[in-house]
Image (cartoon, rainbow, N blue to C red; front, top):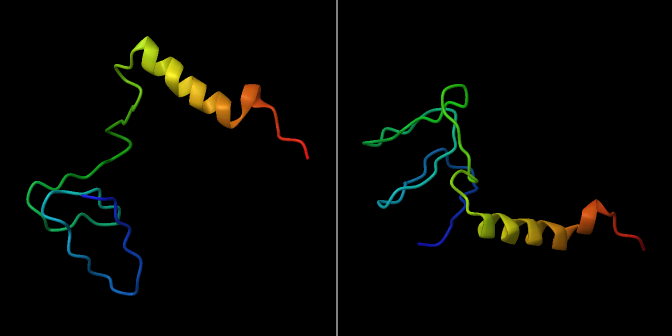
Length: 73
């Protein structure tokens, strides 16, 4: 399934059957829906990362902005 972004005037969206990340003020009435509370839970995408993967990510970030330099005209 591809990533989808719904934007519109309707306040109701039919969630996909396979699951999704639903960002809203209230949890939808879906079985097994979970609420992410940043005061109780955490999200660390770098947990368990290997040295090789860390170097790859650093390489991508340095390619975007080498050594923090600001592009000059």
